[in-house]
Amino acid sequence: MQRIWDTISDVPRGKVASYGQIAEVAGIPRGARQVGYALRQLPRGSKVPWHRIIQASGRIAFDSDTPQFREQKKRLQQEDVPVIRGRIDLQRYRWQPDLDELLWKPTLAWDEE
DNA sequence: CATATGACGACAA
DNA sequence: ATTGTCGCCATAT
Image (tube, rainbow, N blue to C red):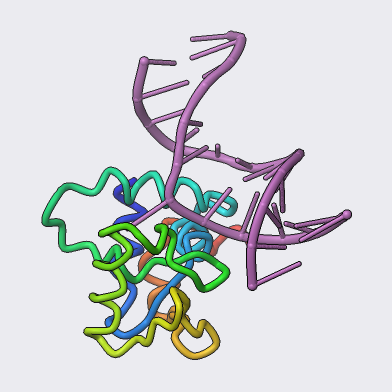
């Protein structure tokens, strides 16, 4: 889980990533739900940028009538990520990890090739 | 060890 | 576009 938090912390301001994407980078191929679980466990006041994580469909995971939805939307717009009718333009705001990150972060083995 | 649970995702209607 | 199913997988009970 710490692994997931670390990965999420790598998402830069002004960009977003899907649960599944985070899971992959974190080394849990089909663990999208694990990311959701990890986020639910976030301690209050954590510095982890949870608001930059959205569904693969580009929508915010919370229902639009919840305070959490509003909080996430607010935070995103504060960093210039437009949220239109609960959705974000992934084509434009999707985070694309650099080679650097893929290289130094992971615990994966590149010597297995 | 057996089930139940999700801030998910892909796909068929 | 919406809705329902099913697959996933770490945790919790």
